[in-house]
Length: 426
Image 1 (cartoon, rainbow, N blue to C red):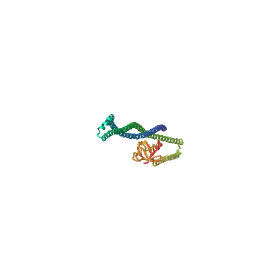
Image 2: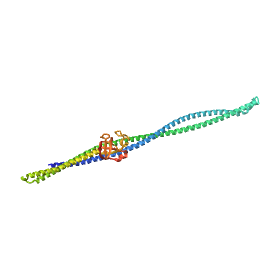
Image 3: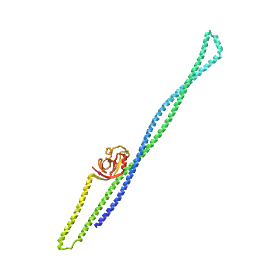
Image 4: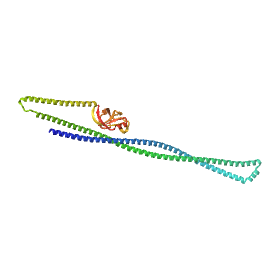
């Protein structure tokens, strides 16, 4: 009956171990899949952040170009304003010159008409007039004076005509110069207006490009936020799966220990039964004379058997004690064993922390080879990992997942995803 019970226990234990191993392997596969998903999300996040940096750089270049265009536009506006004032002044000046020229022309024409009348009169009445002048003169001196007066009037007419011709010529020259200057100003004004429109069009196009980059940056930022959420979700899933795997491993180990104990009890029971059968087989026929001797012998033999079995139990106890002492010594030397945790790396850059150069959640600046991040334990807790002592100074990962700080992003990426036994020293 005992054999059947033990056999059933052994079968149940083997089945439990087999199922536990299968479930544990399935959990490990899920952990590997979650870690691969996290790495894929981290790669996408790094690419999205690189795209954001590139777009930000291009946007800043366009903003600088836009500032230059604004400066050119303002300068052209000021130049056009000055040219417009100069053009208006030239127009006024040209109107005045044209008015003066018209007056001079009119006066010259009047003088010319008067002079023609006098010339015609002198030529038509020249003979009789001279004779009449001579006869009418009281003396030769009077005649010469009148002749000189006529000659002086003619000379005056010629001089005035020449003067008005020169004045008219100067006015025409001035008019021509004013027209040329006005045309030059108008040409320059037209060029500046065209340049202003060109700069305005460039500014509008650049503004559209900047708005496009802003939209792309916003979309990339949303993508980065979604990927960051995937990374955090993968971290949480990994932590849950790691805890589940540890629980399954512990259950499988307990089942194995129970099966081993049952097997040991079965073996001990069988050995005891064989000893009893052997004693009953070798028992002699009852002899009154030898009864006392055999009883004493049997008693002595029984004592010997007990004495032989006792050291075995003591040895087992001593062995267990030694094993316990060894275990206690290992625990005291390495601290309290927390479990086999997931290890990843991070740095103080914008890709790992969102923004670069910040302090840890505990308020101190992180340092390589010293700082780790993990929730579930107080700040300042010292952890022994792969022979190195780290201090918990930051958050960001759940309990069972240790994020080790590195001095550069490349070192954090090259560290990859690992696992190790973790001990708590304090």
